[in-house]
Length: 105
Image 1: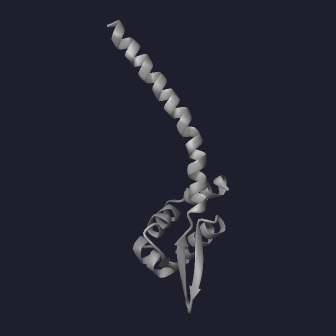
Image 2 (image 1 turned 90 degrees about the vertical axis):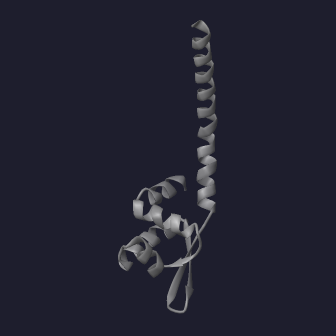
Image 3 (image 1 turned 30 degrees about the horizontal axis):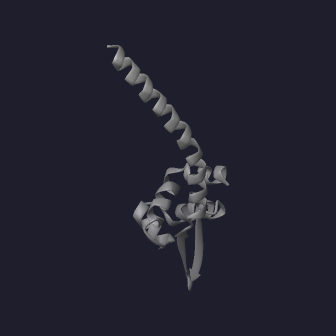
């Protein structure tokens, strides 16, 4: 799932769509208008985001309304959290090393 999420978000327009949907649901045309891209391109990007599970779609009459799904992003945050511990430890070690260097002066 993480790889699918990362692949979907790797494309700049799709990342911008996710940023837009963070503010609330939008139609395909609203997204296209805000990103200044054509509706067919927007639909292709939304299809990929939907297949990756990042957005859900609801049909209302002849409009499709897209909403951001938080679950894949939460999964990614949990995965990234495993790296945060490693980096915190390394930064602590760096801080200790720098303190030792300062004491030697």
